[in-house]
Length: 356
Image (cartoon, rainbow, N blue to C red; front, side, top):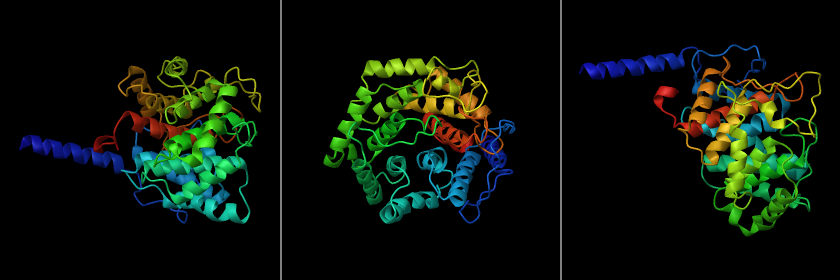
C-alpha cells in the first residue's frame, strides 16, 4: 500500500512539473500570436519539455502561415515532418496540412507554383506526413508528386532557389535529395510504382554525376539512402556516418557551420566568422536523426551524449537556437533546428509519461 501511494505521489509530482506555466489550449490560425524573437540570448529551460517543444512548433508554423501566407523549408514545411513525432502529446495542427493541400489543389491549378522548389518540398513533406500520420498515400500527395515529375529536368534535378541560404536554398543538390527522401518515405510502396520509375532513375543519375558539395549534403544523401534503395553502398554509408560522428563536440552536440566548412559555393553575407565550435539545435538534431535512420543504436554513447545536450539546451520558448550559417540576422534555421531536435529525441526514445 505504501509503495502505491509513493508511486501516485511521483506521478502527481511529474505531472505538476510539466503543466506549470504551459497552456494546454490548442493553437490555431485565429489564436496564434507572433513567436518570441529568435535570439542567442534567450535563456535555457531548467527542464526539457516535449509539450513546450510541440507548442513552439505549432506557434512558429501557424504564425508564419498567418503572416506570410507561404510555405518555407525552415518553418511550416519542416512542421509536416517533425510535428507527428509529438502527436501523442497533442494532435498536430490540421490547418498547416490543409494549407499545403489547398496549395496543390487550387493555387497550383489557378496560377501555378511560385517556384519549382515549392513543388518538390511540398510533395516530399506531404508524403512524409502521410507516412507518419495515416500511413496511406493521400490523393493530394499523389497529385503533388505528379506535378513534381512533370517539372523534373533532364539531368534529374529541379530548377532550384539559389539565394545563398544554405542548406535549403543554395543549390539543386539539396532539392534532389529532398525529393529522394520524400519518394522513399511515401506510403503504399509509391517508390515501386510505374509513375515514379523514370523520375527515380533520373534522381539516381543526378546523384551519381554530381557529388555532394558539402558534408551536409553528403549526410542528406545518406539519409535519402535509408529511404530509397540504390543511392549508397553499405561502405559509403559507413564512411559518411563516420565523418559526421567525428565532428561531435566535447559537449555532445554538433555545430551546423562545420558541415559547410570549405564549401566553395557558400560565403557568409556578413563579416562574422562561422561558429565551428559551438553546438546548436540544427546540427545536433540533424546528425542524431540521420544516424538513427542509418541504423546507429539509440543506446550508442555518442547519441546518448547528444540527447543529453538537446535536453539541457532547450530555450524557454521551447525551441533550440541555431545561428544562421550565412548572416547574423533572423536565424530562421532555428525553426528547422527545433524540428530536427524533436525528431532526434523521438528517434532515440519512445515517448512516455515521465518525459513529457
